[in-house]
Image 1 (cartoon, helix red, strand yellow):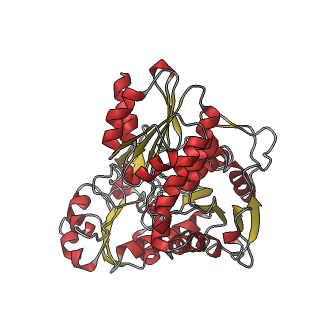
Image 2 (cartoon, rainbow, N blue to C red):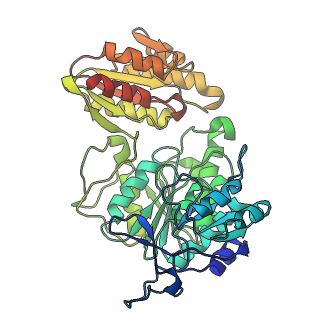
Length: 468
């Protein structure tokens, strides 16, 4: 947004300009860090500093991006959006962030006077800064002219995003969701962090209730929508698996006319969601892949099951996947930790539900050359069937040849019941971290998997510590 001025930012966000005193423009130094230009007074809007040279559309009077965290290292030159929270209103920090070099602030009107006090930076107000953030992101999405891909699903949306980025990046300038910026706040931050010249935006969309995907789609207005699968995640909140499917399908109904929807071909729960004017492409895990496409590095089979969806999405934006790609899979999504004594730990503990748990156990059965060890924690938000689903998980672990099972958490007592004799139960991740090193033998392959709230990454950290 560097080439846009205060008036454009305010108009796009539906905000009121209280103070228009932009600081010196921020330009990248040779290390990529943001530094303040010393010739601010001689820099024309949207142009280059005095001294000649070709005007650079990315260096002007506008902000570099939007941020919401006062400790964000990218704060200098950025627009700080003060989001009201349950305990603290981010707008109350407006004076401090302006003094720290923020381009400006977008806050509720009651913070305007305090924000003006330092006498530097742009001050914008809006009754609902979060909504203004979304409006600004939607406007910037269209200014970029980028192709937008929205990705959601019960399992694998983050790794699918990672895979798609690795396929697209050799052909287009692409920006993808970082970390877990996949909410009504995070998604706009991703869009607003995209620099001019970005050709593809790959946006992950999270959901915890009805209407949330629709809200994200209204901001992103995707050209391509990908639903990886439907599984019993958030059933406790939504009431049924069909309700989960309906919530995910909000992405399809939020696509722009002429868009492409990539959906699982074996999912009857999505059968009623075929919006007019949208081309629907059905994919299945066993679909053939382009000749010559190779995925390098240690990528779990669970992640690769969504490769046909990635290929379909790439083709929808005009890219034929080919050659070797080396995706950087986000942490805790199946990374393999190699320890001494030929012990391998599969760290797949970002989230869990019956579908992803079963797939991970199947992969363990295929990949392990020694004993199969599973540390399985509670699967949360499964609703009234949670006890039965945990017991069925334990039975599947036994069926796939797990020899050592550590069940973690209160619900996982039922996993142990389904597994039968030989299970070790612990109350929490700390208990598992203390117990597991005592159980391991040379050549073991260990699966760590549970819902995010169980925190099984502590077990991986403990094993790393033991290995030093």
